Amino acid sequence: MLLAIISDIHSNLPALKAVLEEIDELGTEDIVCCGDTVGYNSFPEECFSTLKTRGIESVMGNHDYAALTGDTRGFNEHAAAAIEWTRKNFETKKLSSLPINMERDEVLFTHGSPRSIFEYVFPDSPVRFLESLMDDKREFIVLGHTHVPMRIETGRGTYINPGSVGQPRDGDPRSAFATLDTERRKTEFYRVEYDIDETAEHNRRAKLPEFLSERLYLGI
Ligand SMILES: [Fe+2]
Image 1 (cartoon, rainbow, N blue to C red):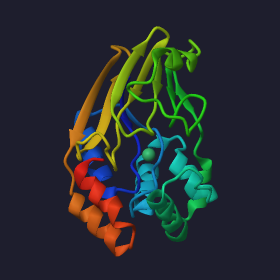
Image 2 (image 1 turned 45 degrees about the vertical axis):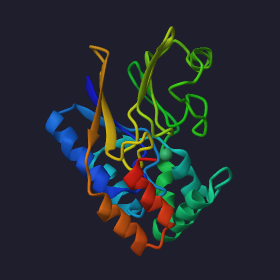
Image 3 (image 1 turned 90 degrees about the horizontal axis):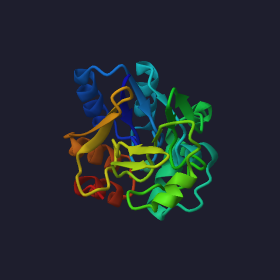
């Protein structure tokens, strides 16, 4: 199966639209989201309803959880301010149905790591640590959370992070997504330009912290 993988949309509708247009041209069989549909930017309802309308299933991210519960422990002040804004401007109980993990054949989808939506798996995480999180049942673990695209093969399976649709952090401000061909075991990474001004201006009108708009231009 040829799957499109998206993650960390973070209420950035112009970015989500640009990515979905590109995915539609590729003609993938399904699209799955690795969490954090909301947070940081100002289009939570639009992004959530776009996924729902398109039938795109998502797991729960740590920002989805924070928006749902109000628990922002461990968040920096800008992230916490955006969660507070989201709780005032979006019906966050809609996020309660998101599962922690999803499985499709040999693929496990989650947000942070197989054991926690809050745990980070980075490209330079020690292989022994990565292998300790795997259980030999699934060949691929597809996740998000770091906003950094990666594919890491270990002796027990492969980790894939498509990068972030709505807030890339690898120095490239273009939206990121990936495809996974489960039969051929092939991953392709994509970057898509989108209208950052549109998101930044919408964020400013919403009175979200300015840093959250500035970082979009820098990809940080
Ligand atoms: Fe995120």
